[in-house]
Length: 237
Image (cartoon, rainbow, N blue to C red; front, top):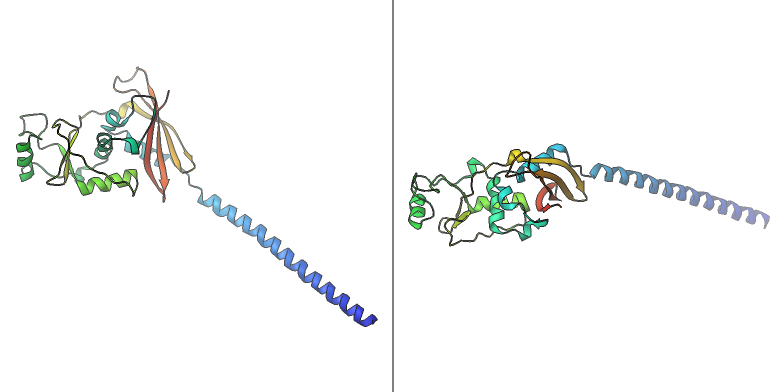
């Protein structure tokens, strides 16, 4: 009986030792996993660099966005609440020379002259030198600015002096924004990343120029799949 009792005690001790080892391993693994997870999270934290902030800033301060897309009253103006004139201004400011649809000396020029959308060269304010984009290119630029889910829907206006005109027959948009440059009157003051939103604080003093009262705005860009998309502009008090 004594031998059996000692044997049982030995087995119990072995079990306790094994359980203790398993517990230590489990605790060690949990601590290690938390440390590694913390490192991974730190590595995945997105930082907004000065270069990124400057690039976002330049997408919005170009001619003619300030005149058309900047709210004149205090408050936030979201992309979802912008009309096509405001959206068109942003698209126009982000188009390149290589994007433009050629109108001069084409059948399109004659068609637009007949419609009264443009005039013959040197005979009016708008001639074939106005900027134009294909609808496909406009949708490409708008998605790059506002997100892959954004769908630009062109509207045709009866006003031939409107800022842009959608020529449905050719699937092109004729842009007729006034050529004014405000870049020298807008300054990026600071920037930060709040959760998934890049926030840029800017100061403007257009159109009066240096020495006149300045306005302050916040630009917001939402982060999605490592890309920043323009979300809103807010005029501050």
